[in-house]
Image (cartoon, rainbow, N blue to C red; front, side):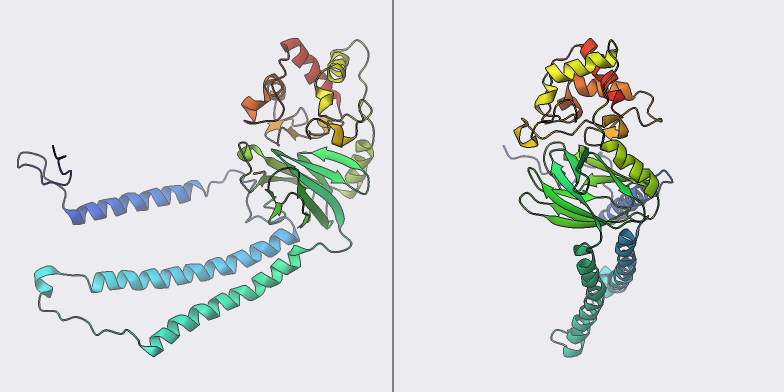
Length: 373
Ligand code: CUA
């Protein structure tokens, strides 16, 4: 049996169908209301930590100052082209009976003047945009010789930072001195990632087997949020990053502290039990704690964050969970407990497995991790 045609006219006793023209207006109305709602929702006054329109250093400023002229040129082109289209649609619309004697308009195909105009104008616009864009790409593409190097290594799903001048290794939070040109020397341990701290710099790939350079610069002390900007597997959305910029004195103090070995908790405390668990359990197979285990990193089962100064970082687990350092996160221990109980529920695909820890063991590990200042 043939299926009933869904567009077939309804019978007289059914509700009268809406005229096609009214339907078009109604649908256009829905589209406009939805678009405006989405635009308004994205203009909220809440803090926007991933806002590239709020540059906090000269690199991000350069990119931002390229964005706005290009944006306004695009807006002007959009208004002119769509305006001409709307005028044509309204003025030359088919008025049915009224237009039955109207002749076809004069055809302009092959009009050399018109062809030249709409070829030359876009060419000039694109050439005008290309000059400052290409110059900025080259300027930002390579680090100046006197910048401070930090190696940035992408892992599924967290960022590792290594400071070649001092030998410091840390994770999730990159600490930099204010008002200093930083050169991120980037690579990846597994797949392609992309490092993006919108208030400080543009995006750049981290490619396995290659080194890419990313210039970063923060005018002031502060905390800047970032995110991996290339789909890199199951927990790409949970691969976040923080950059913390410190005054020069604070940065020197940070370096001095990071160079110390891990704190040894007092005997008999819960934290001491945590250390014992760390030492005798599976943790040492992947994580380094300077002064507790110092393996050659290449002998670790997987690359995992160096935990020597875990409690000096305000976030962990790909910068998605807070540590006790963040005073606004009263229940940070709950996050750490959830993580230790079963990491893949927090970060799907996590290479840190569920170790089957008991609640007491988790308490002891939280107490110990909290001491690692
Ligand atoms: Cu790493 Cu997306």
